Length: 377
Image 1: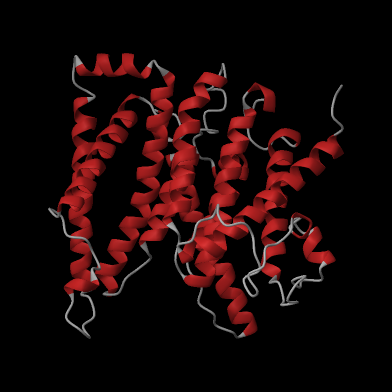
Image 2: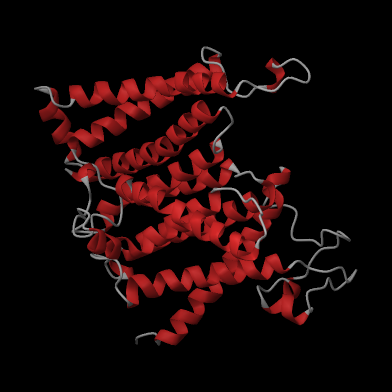
């Protein structure tokens, strides 16, 4: 017996709202360094435990008229807004993917489409939480980026195992070809070396306030030299691996290894992570060297790395170049209302990533891009 469409849509929206309720906990607690699991939900004003019937997404906020049952302090509208947006994201992705067919090659949910939907919903939810924190505190919790990255790596490796013709929708999940996979592996090994060197103190960390005399401001250009030193092994590793992958007999052995498709999927996700994070990091370093002040934050680097791990290198590049247009819209609105209010760049990157995630195939058709890009060649 088939489930009526309206019933499925209602369930998915309700599920998304429940996820949004959890995101509110993440948004409130994570920047404070508190556990997102324990203790249970409580009023931040009086500290009393919130009963389950007062914790129903959207409904409880409306029933309680946005006030705590015990102390009657006002409950921020942010809670219901986040729940509603998350519910709409869950429902919108479901309709776009499985009812409207906006993504080419998307299999039915039971035929593997659930993996793409679930991974993309994790990305969208994480971007929403990161943007909410960034808008309030001008920081992006790295834990959110790590969860998104882990989801992208795992889903990309599993994708070829659950979908028989996984290349039919090759833009749905990252898959790297032989030379691009080699670059991903070499870059990942270089990144591992840089992290170890940073931990050992062989490479100096940037922006260490303990290194500065009291009252002194950091030399931003010098700090970028430190970050370039960190990125050096990543670039060297990628170049060396790219060269070795073209040599016989290494090329033959490497191609046979990639016949095991989960390896190609995992390395495609890693390549997306490196490309996404690398684009923002290059912008950060270049802008800082030119203008002498810190341009973009490392949180944005981690955020776009996470986007690349889920969407792959081609789509994260498109999202990166689309983000400034959202910034221009915001600037135009500011000029229209003659009210200048600076906001961080993370929300623009997030909006661009969600748009590319849903409308990538339409953008490809209109912009004349090659599906899969050079990364799949």
